[in-house]
Each structure stands twice: as structure tokens, then as C-alpha cells.
Amino acid sequence: MTDYPLTDAELDRMAEVAVRVGLNLQPGQDLILTAAVEALPLVRRVVAAAYRAGAGLVTPLLSDEGVTLARYDNAGDDSFDRAPGWLYGGMAQAFSANTARMAIVGDDPMLLAHADPAKVARAAKANAMAYKPALEKISNFDVNWTIIAHPGRGWARQVFPDLTPDQAQARLARAIFSASRLEGDDPVANWAAHNAALKTRTKWLNGQRFSALHFAGPGTDLTVGLADGHEWHGGASTAKNGITCNPNLPTEECFTTPHATRVEGYVRATKPLAHQGSVIEGIEVRFSEGRIVEARAQKGEAAFLKLIDSDEGARRLGEVALVPHASPISDSGLLFYNTLFDENAACHIALGQCYSKCFLDGATLTKDQIAAQGGNSSIIHVDWMIGSGEVDIDGIAADGSKIPVFRKGGWC
Image (cartoon, rainbow, N blue to C red; front, side, top):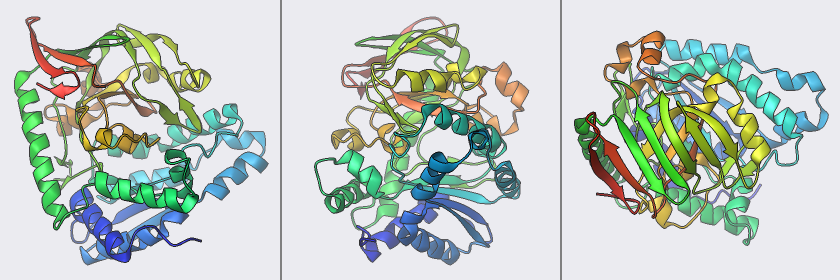
């Protein structure tokens, strides 16, 4: 194994920010941590930081790319309709007992590129269905949670294909460190200032009480109706357990819940989507009454069509997010092939499950009330990018009047 491309001091800094800013882990609180075996140097630092913060018990669950591939190379056909529901049920039970959640991501986005796509789709669907009880605890923001990244070598090769593996991993490590606002004398203060700026944006959006957003740009003329009683969020948010955390490190977005039946028009993706071993490029869809009724892609169309047929809610929106084209991740000029980063380089929409926290008094709403207000339900939640320097956005008020929100990809 090669040396990890971050120094011990940098790993400690990343771990401290993940625990203190990402999770805001509380004394006595347990933590479930998922990561790849390759990320062990960072995992160990995170576990140490969590215990220094007073964690009760940290339970790491580790995955391995070789183990994943072994299934596709050797398993019987019926294996791909199975998932560890017992494990996800236990995670849901832990979240019900106020256990925090951290995911360290960094897998090779093309790991399954050569696997049977039908088996990949079946396994993904089985896993999504089994994971739903735990996912609902996260999407409903029952507990504090966060996602951070480590520079996996397979991932690095995709981002920097012209470099040697060691060079690529080192470059990706630097890009993650920069995008995650970990540079400078005090990264915790950096995040406090950034969260304050995002809060100013969301306060303005919530004060407008738009009924819809209109996106206009090349290949795009889309009206996204917003859910009744929607609420905008960005940066740090308070979970139902009363703990304020940053779910995504990095983050540049202000986001809310669309109305599942009030999306009309057509839209073209502005960046590729890496999903389950496929790179899906040139996505174009048309919505009618909130549902995708036409869909195509220049590359990876079969994978995209399987995705939107995952269940009834997969063809409807669960999130709309505003990100300026001049965000640090966009300015880097990199395509990360990882949603945690690419979604923070452009405005985006997400197919599938909505976030209950994106409603006024969302912590008290039942599933039926969320649905009645327009919130979508699905076993998937997949973001893809629709913003660029050529996209304008208007907010539409209840009386039909329009207020400029973005011009040429930037805040007005």
C-alpha cells in the first residue's frame, strides 16, 4: 500500500473538522461510521477525534472494492436481489436511539463499469429497498449526520487520468482539502463564516415565499413548483435531535423541496452524472405534472432509464438546489465524478426522496402531511446538475410576478 497522500497533521485537521463542524458530535453520543478499507488512515483519526469529543461508542463499518467485485465475478444470479436488511434495520434502530452518522466516501465511480448492468441495477434496487428504514431517518433529519471524502486511488484515476496513480491521488487529496475549506489558520472559523453567508441566502429565499422557480438556458425551460410550506436550507442545519451539524463537507448549496406534481417543461444536464459504474452524459428530460414523461441521454441512457424506473417516485423531484457558477468547486475546473463535489459546482435537481426538514415545522409533520404538501417519496435520491454560467433563474411569486434570482449563473 502506498503512503496516504495527506500528512498526519492534515488528517487530524480533516478529522477534527468532520467531528466538530460536520457532526457536532455530543458527549455520550454514539456514532456509526462507514468507509472503505483504503480510507483507514482517515478513519482512525476520525475515531480518535470522536472519542476526544466524548463519543460513547464509535462503530466503523468498512467496505472493500475487491470484495464488491468478487460478488459480481462469482455470485449466483439470485444474489443480486438480496441486501443486508438486518444490518440496515440495526442502523435504523441505532438512529432511533440518537446515534450519529458519518459516511467517508471516495470509491472508484467506475468500479462496476464492466459488471453486468442488469445485475448492478438489481443489486442497487434491492439495497435501496432494504436501506429505506435507515435512509428515512437520515432524509427526515432525525439525527446529526455528515459526509466527507477521502482521495481513493480509483477515484483519483478517473479525475486525473493523465497522471500516475500516486500523482493523481496527491492531486485529488489537495482538491478535497481545498474544496472542504480546510486550509488557513482556523478551518472551524472558515466554516462559521461560510455557514453565515449561506444563512443570509436562505433567509432571503425564505422571505420571498416563491411558489415556483423558472430555469432558462440552453436546452432548458423548466418551471419547478415548490412544495407548500417549503423551507430553504443551506450549510449548517439543526436536526430533530436538536444538534446543529453540516450534513455535507463541502457544501455550497441552498436547497429546498419541490412539489412532486408541479414541475413542467424540459431541462438539459450541464455535467455528467456518475452512477453505479456508468457515466451518464447529455441527460435531457421533459416533465409534465411533476413526472418525467420523456427521457434520453447521449451516453449511458440505459442506466438512466433504469434509474428513473426504480419506483413510482423516481421520476419526480425530491430536491432543487441553487449553487452559483462561481463556486470554489466550479472554479477548480474539475469534474469529480462524485456527487458530493459535483453537486456543489452547479445548480441541481434530485430525483426521488425529499427531505422532510425542508418544510416549515418539518420536524412535526407526518409522512402523510409531507405528501399532502407535495413532498415526494422514493427509494432513491440522485442529484444531477442543471446549472451553468448560461442559466438564468427567476422566482415566481404567488401572484405570478417574477423576481430575478440568478443571472448568468450568479446570484442577483
